[in-house]
Image 1 (cartoon, rainbow, N blue to C red):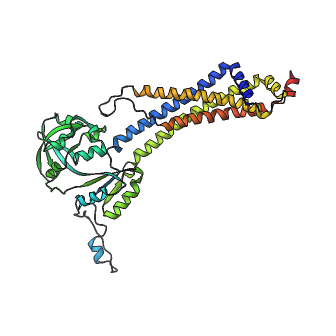
Image 2 (cartoon, rainbow, N blue to C red):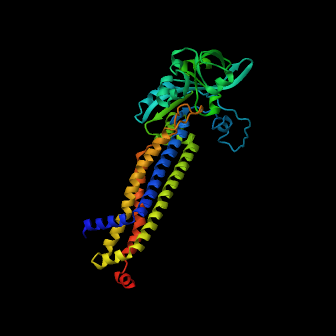
Length: 419
C-alpha cells in the first residue's frame, strides 16, 4: 500500500468536489461550535445556581435538634411487665440548642486531615423593631474571618465592609430586603430583640444580598460575641459547627461518622441540598444530549455527501480497482476523506466554540439579586473541548466508513461494461 499515492488521490477527490466538502466541514464546525458553547454556558449556569446555595452551605453541619426523647420514662418503668401504656402530648427534651464542649469538638475537627476548615455559628430567632412594628428575623452570629475564608461571605456584602462586623462592637449586617423594608441606611442603629426578651441596639455596618429574596428579607449577621450577648449566654455558647472538607464527596460518610462519634446531629451537604444536585444533573444531561445530537446530524450530512461522491465517482473507483488498487485501498481513501473533514471542521469548531464562549462571557449580566455576577457565566472546562474533538472524529469516521465499504465492493467489470 502506497500511502503517499492514496493521500494524493484523497486530496484530488476532496478538491474535485470542494463545495460539497466545504458544506460538510461547515456542518461539523457548526456542530462543534454549538456543542462547546452550549455546554460551557449550561455548566456555567449550573455552577452559578448551585453556588448561590452551596457556597454558603457547609459540607457538614453539626447541631442539636429539638426532639422528644426516643424512650419515655414510663416505657422504662414498665419495660419488664406485660402492661400496656399510652403516652399523649409528648414534649421535646430540655437538651437545648447549645453544643456542649463545642471548643473541644472544633479542636478535634481541625486536627482531622480531611477537614479544610471549621467555623462556629449561632443561629437564633429575633425581631427587628421598626417603630411600633416587629419584623421577624434570623440572627446569625459568625466568626467573621473563618466565615469569609470558607464560605466567601464578603462576596455577598454589597454595602459596607464585612470586617466592620468584627471590628465594631454591637454591629450588624442586614439582608438587603430587610434593610429596604425598614428603610435603614449604613450607619443607622436598629433595635433587635431576641426570643428571650433581650433588647440590644446594633449599628448597621453593611448589607448583604444572597440572591434569594426570601432569605434577604429575614437574615442578618453579627459577630459571635454580639450574638451571645443577644442570647444572654456566655462565651462558650455555640449552636452550630460548620465543616468544610477538602473533598465534598466525603461528606455523607463523614457525617455518619461524626454523628456516631460525637452523639450529635450531623447533616451533609448532599442531603441538605439534594434538589439542587438533581437539577444540575438534569440540565447537564440535556446539554450533552443536544450537543451530541448536533454532531450526529452533522455525521449524517457527511454520510450523504460521501454517498453522492461515490455514486458520481463510480468510473474513477472502477479504474482504480482495475489498475490494481484493492478494496481496502479504496476504503482507506474514502475514510481518510471523511476523517479529514472531521479534523478540519472539528478544529475550526473548537476555535469558534471558544470564541463564542468568550463573546458570551463578555455580555453584561447585572441584576440586583446576584451581586457577584457581572457577565453571563461560562465554564471553560477543557474536557468539553476534548469530548467535542474526539466525537467529531468518531462521528465522521463512521459517516465515511459505510460509504467507503460500499465503494470497496464495487466490481470494476460491471461498471466498465455498463458504460
